[in-house]
Amino acid sequence: MASQAASRDEQEHACRGDAIHYCSSEIPNKEKITACMKQHYDELSPPCKAMFKRPPKGGSS
View 1 (cartoon, rainbow, N blue to C red):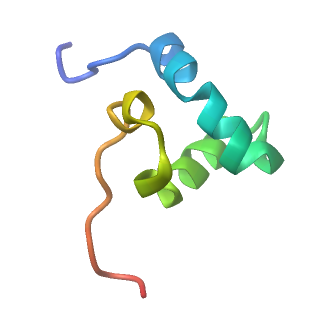
View 2 (cartoon, rainbow, N blue to C red):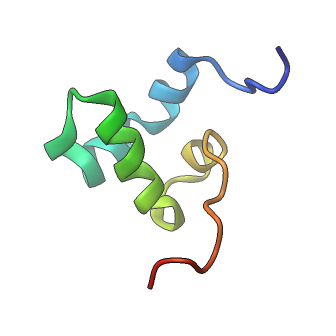
């Protein structure tokens, strides 16, 4: 399955620091961490950004 560019382990490794920095209050709930990380997409480190699809612009604001 090539569409899954990275495994969960790779994603967790790439994003661990960002998750702790931006979303520590959501740990250990992976679904909440993922939602939080998407909210902080523009602030994530490049390796972590690569693990997430860019959220669509517009919509809520």
